[in-house]
Image (tube, rainbow, N blue to C red):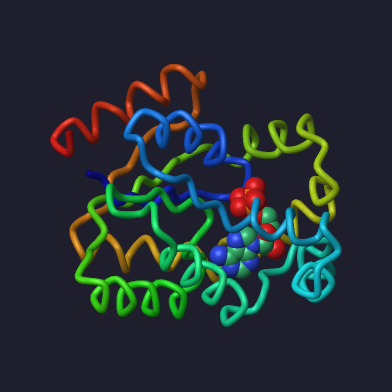
Length: 186
Ligand code: ADP
């Protein structure tokens, strides 16, 4: 049983780590970025509504992502836990998640904070080549991260569930470090 949040700046490697971590714990990987990109690719009303925000490196309005996550956590296969990737990203999202989990009689076990230097983040994103990975949009996403998302570190540190992981190294080493920080949840 593990209820986990993977946290970090854009390009920190959340998605990469999330896939193996979710598999390892046998829990669903819930990525708001992936859900939003899938909605855009499908051309659904949700996708049409959110496309410009992603293209411009802005956050999608809280209400939209909150509804998406609420719906996902309301589905069946979350009894053994879950791994949230890219959510929450604002204080209102974190507060709503906390209230929602309380209603469900759940909590969050750990928030994993992937720490990576800005130079490494930029080179990783530029080599990834996603449509929102151009230099100008990356700059915008960093600004949004510092203004709206970074304050969550103090929020979760205050809850006593934050673990800092040095993510400035190879995928395998980061993965090992995360596993080590979660051994007590097994
Ligand atoms: P990265 O962490 O590399 O920026 P993500 O896939 O997590 O990539 O997010 C890509 C984009 O999706 C964000 O820039 C934002 O526009 C949107 N997004 C994802 N999650 C959220 C969220 N929780 N709240 C608002 N917007 C989000």
